Image (cartoon, each protein chain N blue to C red):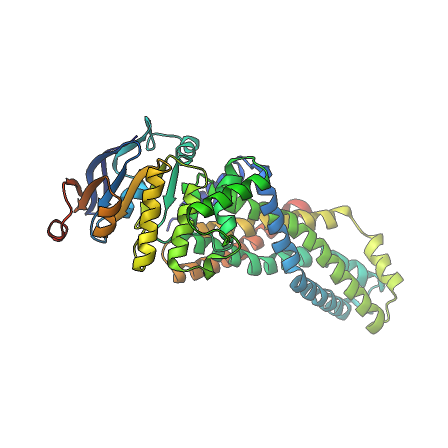
Length: 245
Length: 229
C-alpha cells in the first residue's frame, strides 16, 4: 500500500466529512449525542488516569528536585508537566482507545450490514450523518475532558505534596501560579483540539473502509486506535515545536 | 419511467451484466428472475448508483443517474424506495426511528406530523402498535415489512425490492407479496423486484425478465424448465 495514497485518501475523507452542508437542524442532536458519548462516557476513566498522573508526577518531581531547589518549584514543575504534556496527551490516548475503536467498529458494522448503503438510498449523506457528528462531538468534548483532567491531576498532586511531602497547598499553588504562562494552558488545549480531530477521523475512516465481515470490523477498530495513537504522538511533537520550540 | 440502457459490469474477468437493457413503465412492476449469484443485486445497486458500472446508463424520468452530480443523485433517490435483502434496518433505532429517519432528514414537518406519517405507514404494512420495538426483537418477516415501510417513508414513485420473500415462511411470504401488490394497485408504486423465487415472480410481476450469465431476456411465461436451463 502506497503511504502517500493512504495519506491522500485519509485527508480527502476528512475534508469530505467536514466541508459539506451541515444541515444543523437534524445534525445538532447527533453532535450532542457524541459529545455525551465521548465526554461523559470517558469521564470516569479520565478521572482515574488524571488522579494517578497527578500523584506520580508529584512523586517523581519531588524525588528529582527536593532538597536542591525551593519547594515551590515542585508546584511549578508538576503544573507545567501536567498542563503542557501529560493531561492533553494521556487524555487523548485514553479517548482514542475508547472512542476511535468504537467508532470504527460501529461504522464498520453499519458498512457490512448495508446500513450505510441504506442511508445512501434514502438520499442521506453518510459523511454528514455518521462522520460529522463524531468529529465535531469529539472536537467539543476532548478539550473539556483535558481541562477536567488537568484540574484533577493538579488537585491530587497538590494533595499528595501537602500530606506526604509536607509542602503546604499555599507553597505548591505559589509555584503553580507565580510562574504560570497562559501558553502553558492554551498550548495544551490547542493540542487537544488537534488530537480530537485525529481520533474521530481515524475511527470514522477505518470504519467506512471496512470490506468483508466481523474479522475486518475487528481489524478496523485496531487500525483506528493504532493510527490515532501514532498521529497523536507525531502531532504532539509538531505542536510542541511550534508553541514551545 | 425508468430506462436501463446497455448496462455492463465486470468483476475482473467475470461478466456480471452484459449490455442489460429494459424499461419500467408507470405503475408497472418488473421482475428480474435468476438463480442466486447471477448479479441481480448488482443490477439493482447499479441502477440506483450505489455500485459503479463499466458502461451504460439508467435514466429516471429523463435524468441519467450515471451522469448526475452527487446532489442530483440524491434528488433522484428521493423518488426511490429501496428494500434490501438483508433489510439493513438501523439496529440502534426502533421501528419508529427507522421509518421516521428519511422524513426528518428531508422534510421540516413537526414531530406530530412525523408520528402521523409513521402511524399511516405502519397501518399500510400491517404493523400498527409495533413502533417502539427494536429490529433485534423482530422476526425476519417483520423486519422485511419494516424495511418496506421505511422505503415508503418519502412516498417515493418507485420501489426497488431485493429478494423480498427470500427466507420467509409461507404465511409471511404471502403477506409480503400481497403488500407489494397493494402498493402497486392502491398506491401506484412502480418498480422492480429481483428474486430467484418463481412463485413470487409470477405473483407480482407485470413483466418478467430472466438474468443469466450477464444477459437479460424477457419471458413470455414462467416455467421451471426455462429457469433450470
